[in-house]
Image (cartoon, rainbow, N blue to C red; front, side):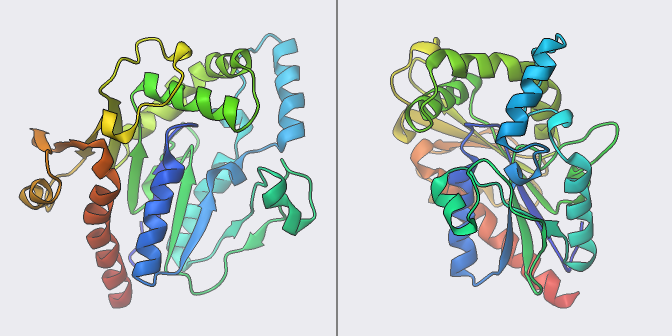
Length: 290
C-alpha cells in the first residue's frame, strides 16, 4: 500500500459486471481530473487466445477438465503482484493490452486474441486502476491483495452471474448454449479456490441480488434489470462510513447489518459515486502530502 502511488483494484469473475463498475470510476477520474493508469486483468493472462485453446486441449488429453482462466496456471500472478508492488513504490511498472476483438486490434495491426508488447506505464500518473479477475488474489506463492489501497468486489448472486454470462456470450460472442455451460462447469474448481476467496480480502463488496425468479438460470431469456434487483453493499471496515447520509441520498435503501446497506439496483452507480469519490479525493490529498 502506498500514499504517494495508490492502487485501486476492482475484482470479479467473468460476467459479474466489473466493466460497468469501471465506467463509473472513469466518470470520477474525468470529473476530478485524475490521471489514472488503467490495467485490464485480461492482459495478465499467460496465453493468448490460440495458445489457450491449445493448452486446454493438452490439459483435457491429460485428464484435466478444469484448466481455466480463473486459475494460476493460466495467469501471470507473480507479474501482477510485481506490478502492484512496483507501482506502489515508485509509480512505475510494465503493462500490456489484450486485444479482444477486431476493433481493438486494428490500431495495433495485430490479430484479435493477442497481446500488445509490454511497455512502461507513462510517467506522472496519479494512481493505478485495475479491473479484472484477480485484483485481490492470494495463493501460497503470491499476495496481490496486500499491495492495493482500495479493493472492490463485484459479486452478483451466482444464478444472476450465470445468466449474465450465458446471455452475453451467446448474443455478443456467438457461443452456443452448450459451450457456455461447459465453460461454467470447467471453471468451477478455480472459481471456488481462486475467485470466491478474494471477496474476504476486499474493502467494499457490491452484490446484485435479483428480485425475480432465477432458480433455473440456464433457461433465462433475459437478464433481470436494475429495477428488478437490490444491491447489497458490505464494508469490511465501516468506521468512517456515513450511513445516515447514504440512506438519505439513496431512497428506499436500508441497513441490514452494522456494516451492510441494501439499495435499489438502479442506485448502484450513484452509490459508487457517493462512496468512492471522497475516498479517492482523500487518496489524492494524501498523495500531495507525501
